[in-house]
Amino acid sequence: MLFEVDWLQFTPGTAIAGGALIGLAAGALALGAGKIAGISGILGSTLNDLAQRTRPAGWRVTFLGGIVAASFIWALFAPVPGSHYGESSPLIAMAGLLVGFGTRMGSGCASGHGVCGLSRLSVRSAAAVGTFMAAGIVTAVLTRHF
Image 1 (spheres, rainbow, N blue to C red):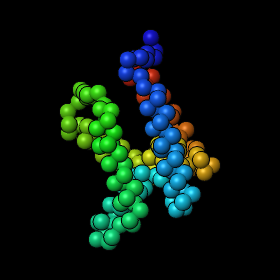
Image 2: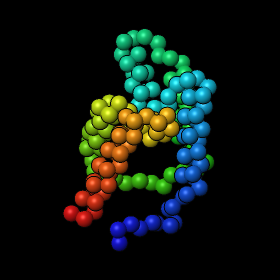
Image 3: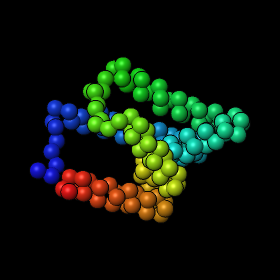
């Protein structure tokens, strides 16, 4: 079978709530502060400021801190089932670095282009999301069938 859902682990309610919260946060930041909630851009700018020994913008630090804090708060109330990756930690770290490199090359992450870029009708984001989706579909087909 091409696609199977593990109905015991399927949690559409939390997925919908999470998506709504992401949209709410992105909209609040855009309407309230005129800023784009692209996580890779916010993190990259913060790290760049720290590397240049300048003080990062307070809103960026607060936004990133909120993401980290929300993860811990969520884990307190609804622990995520244990995950196991069959690969070694160095390989997973290398994969993370490659994702970060690709994010910089693509001028943002998939979620930033998808949530913030498409909502602003950005042509660049539409091209990026189309590329991400095509690459994901090809990868899924190749890994499942070959």
